[in-house]
Structure formats: C-alpha cells, structure tokens
Amino acid sequence: MDDPGNGRAVVITGAGSGIGRQAALALHAAGHRVALAGRREEALGETAAAIAGTGENVLVAPCDVTEPESVRTLFERCLERFGRVDVLVNNAGVFGPAAPFDEISHGQWSEVVSTNLTGAFLCAQEAFRHMKAAGGGRIINNGSLSAHVPRPHAAAYTATKHAITGLTKAISLEGRAYGIACGQIDVGNAATDMTAAMSHGVLQANGSVAAEPTIDVRNVAEAIVFMAGLPLDANVQFMTVMATAMPFIGRG
Image (tube, rainbow, N blue to C red; front, top):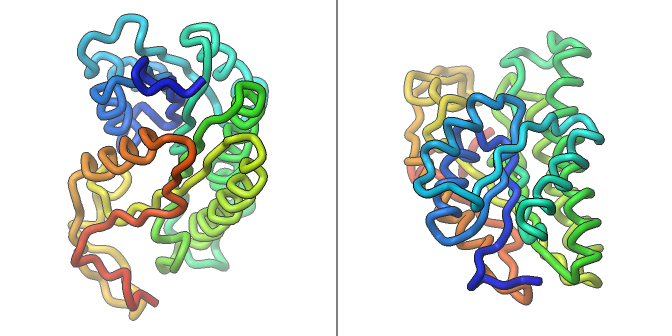
C-alpha cells in the first residue's frame, strides 16, 4: 500500500491558496500524486497550472469540507484516479471575525467551527476508513500556534485549533491498530494572504498594535513534505514551524 517509490497519493484540502497551494507544489515536486481539494474550482485550477507536468499525477477536486457527501465524493475521486489514499493533509481553515468575545455572533462562530473542526473531522474520518481498509496511511492536521495560546479577539479560531490538537491525539491513538499515523503541524506567521496583516500591525495581548515577522510559506511546505514522506513506523506527532522572532513564547 505505502510505496514511496511510486509516489504516495496525497489529498490536500484548502489547496487553492496559501499553505495548501505551496504544500501541493512541494509534494508533487517530491514525486507524490496530489488531489487538490477546496471550495473554489478556479483557485484549484491555478494551483494545478503552477505544477509542472501535471497529467495523471494531479487531480482537481472541488469540495466543501463541511458537507459529508462532498467529502465522500472527494475521496472516491482520489481512489478512482490514484487507486489509493496514502496521506491526507487536513489544511482547510478560516480565521473568522477579529472581534471581541462578547461580539461574536452565533453565525460567525458556527462558520469557523464548521470549516476548521467539523471539516477536519469529516475529512479525517473518510481518510481513516480508506486507510484502515488498505492497511495504513497518514493524516497530517494543520493546527496553529493558536492551538497553544490565543490571540486577542480570536475566540472561535482559538477554540477550533485547540480542538484540532484533541482530534490529532484521538486519531493517533485509534489509528495505531491499523497502521495509521496522525501528526500535527503548528504554523506561526507563514506569509500568506490570510496573514497579510501581520507585517502591518496586529493587536497584541497587552493591548498594543505591533507588526510581527513572517516566514516564507515554502518553509512550511517543506516540513509537510518531510512528515508525509516518513515510513509508517515513524511519525512527527507535533511540529511547530514559526518565524523565529514572532511573539509566541510569552504570548498572553
């Protein structure tokens, strides 16, 4: 099932931009086959176009990770194209509103939870089922530094990312019996559209506003390639990739 020499079949959610796009580029360059999942088909097509020599090694698969049937279809398409699912990179996510805790609406809360947590659960569960039947596989969840400590005005995002850590641990525990490895990458200030405000100035825990350093998102992509390429008897349980000088240690 797990044949690195033939290129592993990798499903990447949120592949239309940011970390997901760079991870897809890097994984394909490392010899893996990639299924690009996300809500925006046009953006997925742009990711596919950026991959040289796509052909049968790239699948554009529009998917709404909050919808169980859409997720099932995603994995069925991956199986039809590649014959297996070796790795899931659970990357899709939204930051949600930057608002004080008492001003977050039920709808805003629900949107963040549906995408970041329920979406990750649905994709991981579907991947788990296929990997269990096939004799093993790997799930990589995109956590965040917010899985450890919050930013101000980010309650929904923080809550979902803390929950991702619990999900990672639960999958890792239950996956042992089936050769399924599960790990988490916690990213701090990778330079993407989602983090563009960091370099201009964001609210700090002490109430001040300050610019924060960022890192090239390709550093994160390379870390994902490393995690995805490990043999199934080895696992990166948790990895933190962050800008060295960002205010994380001591934050809050």
